[in-house]
Image (tube, rainbow, N blue to C red; front, side, top):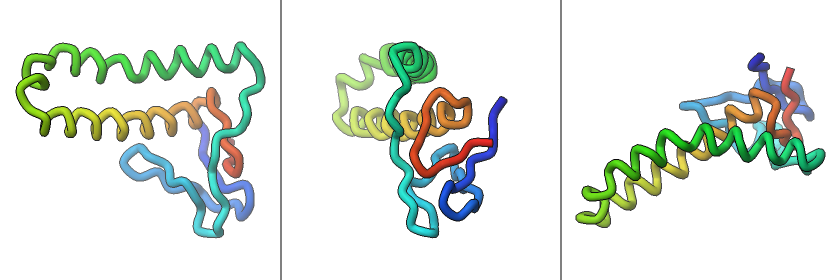
Length: 106
């Protein structure tokens, strides 16, 4: 179900480090979101993104008392959310729910 990602320009495998794919290939090709194919694809993408982001958001909701006491914990939580968003983006590309220009998933 999860395919290998390769650059569409040079054919080189896209390295995924710590769950995050890079924004460009070594050959210079940039990877950006491709236009969605319709309302069904957008709905599937948003539902999958909500499902993947929900554990982190539930954890943050449970840790609300600690977050209210410290701005530093808010910064850490924001960094975790942004990192997890990039991981979710990579997972959705692997699963085929998100298409990116310049990336071939086989």
